[in-house]
Image 1 (spheres, rainbow, N blue to C red):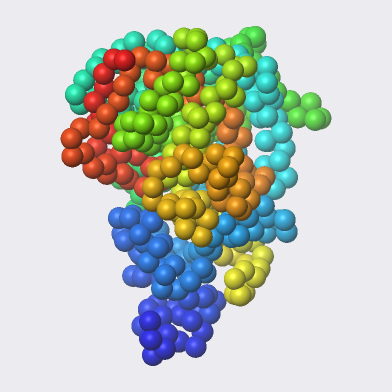
Image 2: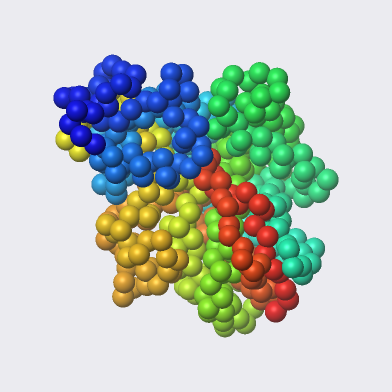
Length: 453
């Protein structure tokens, strides 16, 4: 860019004024829509172009708002650790305010801390061991219906499986015939999060999302009385009986809001991660064979909770899948007060964006980042230790994913059983096509060649 194209304040000449953001480089795009359509087409390419043009701090406009992007691992650490308590999550995730307004991720500061503390009771070792039994049984039952095929669409199959596992572990239910309704409701909620039209008008994606939320909340609410009285070990029962330090229970509204968000996040993000991982195992058969050898070395049909850490190579492949395509590639926050970063003064009341996905592909940290290479997580290379936030697919700081260990456990349990019974390969000449946001998924269902071992 030449000097004549740029104003003294760093804004691009000929673009709409950002007012108080005039001194921040970048541009906001079209009136009202901003650069929404360009962003939706390829979010990574969108940000990569702007980073190369403007540097590590730049403004952009999407979904009717103005945002300042902060690029790099230092930015992730600064924003997510939030040592000065500047960055709010609720207003940051403004696109979710009609869908998951009171989920844990959209709560801030002391309110977030108190809710998270109550919820953590459901993720302690004893409940996790109980969940492990449900996971193993559910995986075994669901995979019995998977038939070898030259074109097995993995994404819808694993999405159904993770929803069934979520219903078992979270709700203590076998959802059976209701699975399709629940799955579609979650699909509608997630799709609405990036709807261009932000009002819930009939026939719009946002309208379908808000209707889906109402359906799910009513579904969960009807189950609360039984869970409060019962002695179930599912997560729903844990929430109904968990108390705060002063003995307070969650209200019915709080329970259904937490379940709505957690069940969506748990099954959609794990579906995304497993889709990337199985694609990689199919694309790189040497890694598939190595992980299978590790799985078989345990000598058990189902992995025991105590043996999870023995699947070290499985863990490396999973970590590389998350680096390659993290389920939450961009993390928004809202600056409640002014701050300085990268030589710029950023005013308060500003939307902020940082990106684990962009950092996961930077050659400043990773050796040949476009290659799928799980050995980068081995002890002798340890590329993920080059920066505290080099690898952060689960976020960080106070909002680090509360279900991180549950997700890791679920992935290991699935891979352990899956590779004992199946081999996977990609169809000849196959090129994957992925939708990057809001949660990455293959546009074509990820067709694979599925055969028995």
